[in-house]
Structures are given as structure tokens and as C-alpha cells.
Image (cartoon, rainbow over all chains, first blue to last red; front, side, top):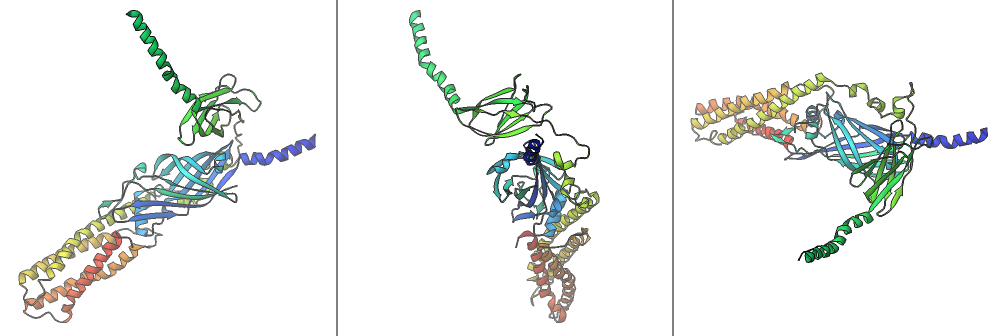
Length: 178
Length: 292
């Protein structure tokens, strides 16, 4: 009887551990795109960190990235970006989402995101992402149709011409279960 | 007459009846039903549990509640992939996938688990939403810095003024170069030279204000220049000294011309120095405007 209980426990423990599993962000590339009448600019950051905690079939994910980590290829432009987005006052961009645990096996995913940036919180509903799983790692890619006005950011200008309000952010992530 | 009217209404009614029923019948055939029983860990029925089915394609949610027997029934759901979320007070929320096919009923029974135990010494990341602290960023990176923000605000304000003044300076600078065509030749009048000097003086004054805003803009500690801004700054090392040298050489050339002499010696470098200065200024302006 005692042996049976031990065997049952041994079989159940991994399942329980999986139910309360965690995800760790292995790699992440975030790219924002800014359009100005004179040129197009992209700022890239590889400094994002993220974690997902799962319980009862639900996973809560948090991804954060320092605002100052974005590099557009010009330090002056990056400092302007830091200023207009109030990056010293609000140094982190955070993205939160809640997903069912089984969604890691889907090929596509529509995700509700809550993004905190520049002291504001914006919600993006049903943002489409593509998923690919290779060797236990899940690669997720998609574009968030963010705008400056979502975060009450005045569009910066160059030579008296303002940039466009739309700043789509391309997201490429690799998650690993822990 | 009355009997004929009644007959006509009856006939119309008989003809219209199929039309009235056709649409709902079709809808019934195309829609799916999701039903099931919600139970507690002990197997008892859970009444008043909230059941929400979200269509993954449209994002539309359809909600219902379980009855006293723990049974729920969601009818008239379009076929497709769904995320079914079942929650009840005192239980952990359960989320399951479901694929509904038109004209069929899918039974999805759910056994709700007890809520997670709140252990006093449990790490924050074990069963709750992850926090910023869980991600391990250095504290200096996540803390707000009002002084730095004020520095950035001042820097941006001064560089905006620098940019505006630079654009304004461009106009008299071009006019000065154009006016120089009639100021340096053998047969030029003193009026042409005076116009050239006046425009050059205005350019110099505006340039000085432009330079002031760039030089006095605060530096941000820990920032290394890279990208087109480096070229912009390098050009300043050409047009800056050029803007000092050009009027000095110009004054010498002006004196020589006013004395009826041909411009000679070092003063003859006024034109080439001015062209290089204006060229460097233009290149600095372009480096901020055009990506290369």
C-alpha cells in the first residue's frame, strides 16, 4: 500500500510541477519604427528580460526593457527619444499579458497586451503573434501597432517637421520553459 | 367579401411561414453548442460558476453561469477555436481550449482546483504574477531619475533652439554668398560691398547665437556620441573657425578694396575660406536631415 502511494506520488509530481511551470525569456529583439518626412528610422533593443509564471492553466507574462537601451544608430536621436518619452523619469517599458498554458502549442496567437511606457498605460487587444517551437524553445514574433498618442507623447520634430504618430514595434522573442 | 379577405390572409400566411422559419433553422444548423458540468475537487457541483468562451478568431466572448447542478450550456456559438475560462469564488480559474464544429455539441466538463496556498515565505514568482524585481535588472536601471529628466529637458530645449537658429542662419548665409558675386570683382561698387558686409555681419551674429545653444546644451553623463551626430560635430570644427576667420579676412579685403587696391596677400583667402565654411555648415545641416 505504502509502495503504491509512493509510485503514485512519483508519477504525479512532474505533472504538478508542470502545472505551476515558469517561462524565461531567452532572447528578445524589439524594434520600433519612426517615420519622418525626410527619413525612416528604426531603434533596436536586445536588453529585454521576461518571465512567465503559470498556475492552473493560466500563465502571466511580464517583459521589461529599459527605454535607454534602444539604439537607433545615432546617440543624439536616442537622447531626444529618451527625453520625449520621459525615459529618465519612467526608465522601463513593461508589457504584461495573460495566456492559457496550452497556447504555447498554437501556431498563431491573438494576445491582449498591457503596456506601460512613458508614465502611461495602454492596452492593445488581440495583437496577432506567430509561434514556432524548436527544441523546447518557443519563438514568438509579431508587431504591436503602437502610436505616440497612446502614451501621450508629443511627436518630436526635426527641421520643424513632426514624425508620424504611428510607431509600430516589431517583437521577436524566444521563450524557454523552466 | 370578408370571407375572401380571411382566405387571402391565410394563403399569404401559409406562403410566408417557411420564410419565417428558414433563417433560424439555418442558424441552428451552422452554430455549435458548448455544455458541461463544473465540479469542485471533491466532485460536488459548483453552482454560479462563470463560464466564458472567447472565440480566438474574432475575440468575441460569450458568457453564462452554471445552474444549481453545476451545469452550463452555451448555445448558438459560431464554429471555430475557443478559449474557455471557468471561474468561481473559492476556486482557481480554469482555462481550456475548445474547438467547436458547426451543428454539434461539445461537452467540456471542468473540475476546479482549490486556490493556491499563500505560503508566508514563498518566493514572489512562484505562484503570483511576475514582478519587475523578478527580472533582475540593476536597481539603477529601474529607478526614476528626476534630475536626469530635467537635464534631458534642458538639453532638448537648447538643441531645438540651436536647430531653429541654424535654419534661420542659412538664409542670410546663402544671401551673403550670392552678394559676394558682386562684391569682389574689379568693377564692383562700394554699395555691393556694403550689402555683402551687412549680410555677412548678420550671418555672423545669427551663427554666434546658433553656436551658443549647441555649446551650452548640457552633456548627458555616460553617453558616447555615435552615428551622424559625430559628423555633425566634426563639421563644427571646420565651420566654427571658418566663421571667425572669414570676417577677419573679409575686413582686410574690404580695406584693400576701399583703398583702390587689388585684394592681395592673406586677404585673398577670404573667398575660399568663406566657401569652405558655408560648405561645412551646409554639410552639418544635411547630416541631421538626411540619413546616410
